[in-house]
Image (cartoon, rainbow over all chains, first blue to last red; front, side, top):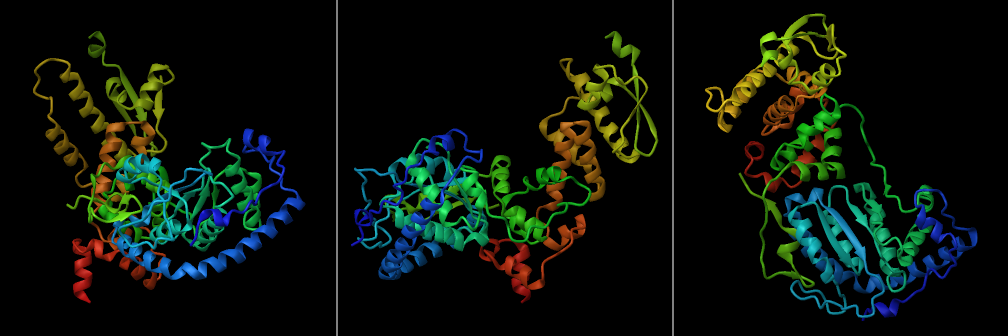
Length: 314
Length: 177
């Protein structure tokens, strides 16, 4: 049985005098992580990873099965290349309720909880097709979602506590970097700036991947962009400034976006970009509606609610 | 009222040196020119450096039409007032026969002169030109270089291909195989 309390690992028991500074001025390079802390964290991380590998091997089969179902459901979803996923980690909540996942046959000991308070977010965002808000309490959810987002994915880990979620975080980061070719963005909402647990996650992530992006540690709280692999500069449309070209392209109905993608690498990058996502949502007023079997559920969330927004066919 | 009888003229010079003389009211449709005129910094010829003469002619045509509508809509029942449908039809007619390079210039000009209506017309035209086209047609139209290898292109095309079954383009491709 996997219970979160079983994985209670305090990773960050450091004194962080710089914390206030950091929170006050997140964009200034005040963030410091001294060598000792660094080594300390590294040690913990390697411990965690061992633990994780152990844990993973035991439950991997179940995940795979579940994942397969989800992926098959989602690949049917034409929008999947432009989904932004926003993932909020739980804080340490004593009354944390584990959703007993029915519906799609999640094993009892692999609990996925999509917290109630996210429902509102779901409603507005999913139907507005802009952002999917997920409160993630285990990396299972993330594993389910990431393969589905062929385009750039914005993952925001907010308000996450280090304790029981240490394994989760390791995994999240792993998954994120595994899919960094997709242009995954890591960010922080900034709403819970005062929350030290969120801070610890960030320290942790920063330390773990310090070799990847040193700036992240220093530019604390900023959104880190993982550079796209082959970005091709040059005008979108010859003889037209890019802002005007964007104005035009964003008004092209969604069902033709696939054609735009095939035009050139630059256009493909564009259609896969987060900016495009935002722009199109602003510009187009296509009617979206959901289809699917209303009896399917994922955790306590009906599946129809999650992954089947489609636009009206012509 | 007295202003309209005077009909103050404004002179505009296009990038290739041609000078157009238009009424002030016509020039004022363009927000950029309106600002210039209101601040009295345009007594001689106004140079419009990024717009060629044929494009400027088109822009002025549009502005004249706008003036005609707005001047007549102030009186209660007038023959020139248009319904939504008529306006659409007029816009289509106005943009008829405009090719992609002219359209680009027109967009740049209307953006520079800050004429929202014309910009919208241009964008709509652009959208109607793009939508429903095959990627190759789009490339030809805008001189975009295809930097995909054939395999890459095939791959992208096959992503989510099921979703486009209704699209004649995909039907055609799959039936030709």
